[in-house]
Image (cartoon, rainbow, N blue to C red):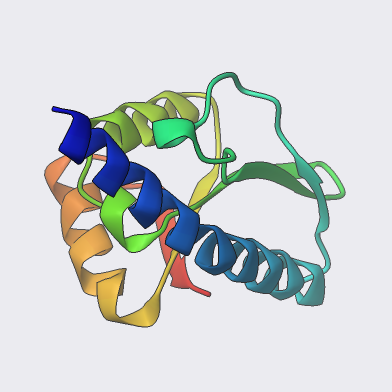
Length: 120
């Protein structure tokens, strides 16, 4: 059991740089579309990493935005978070390019027709 915990910590440490890049690129993309972007305070982070969730507003339009690293695309916790956000309004998910089709498949399987999936 101890070996598993050590391995998980190493993986999370390596993903921190990827997370920062993903959030930065996603926020830049939204700003180019005219959105004002701010972090959402929604509780505990996934697997001890920082929560990659924020709000983007353009006039009266408010979008809850998720930035997912590779390991988070298929998790049950991700499904729950996106489903909860979807019920409360417009939702967008950013993933790496190779994962876009897999995320679109997940969204369709979860029955979330109004969730936009884009790449960072």
